[in-house]
Image 1 (cartoon, rainbow, N blue to C red):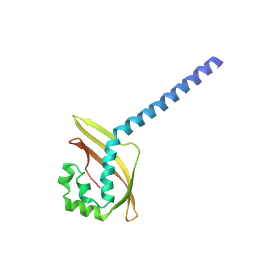
Image 2: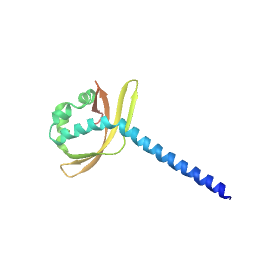
Image 3: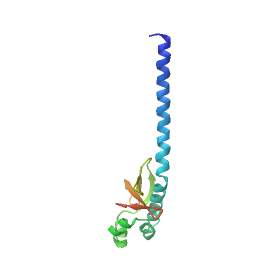
Image 4: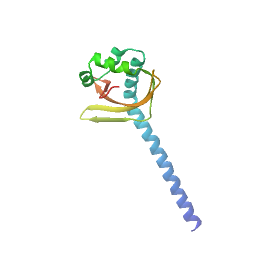
Length: 137
């Protein structure tokens, strides 16, 4: 193989590597930006639970979740495994179909009992605010 051919091949490999790296960084930025607000809302939900504020956390549920879980039932579920801290995983998903904005974000939750678990929060934007929907806890 000639020296010119080697230079061209290595140059093309370099371009491909740089493009993939740039595309990966762009994808990270887009996903991170799209899930920033849903993660903040899920974080506020978990912070309320960690502080023992079940009523405040309940207010952060979407209408559907509030219909599926009454306040008393929700409080019983929380008392079974009270969260102590949480940490959000990278990424998540975002969708806007027919004007309905939804997202999913995953957190690792450490419980006061000492256990640890991953939970994916289904989020929905209602009246301009992100709410926890689906299985809240």
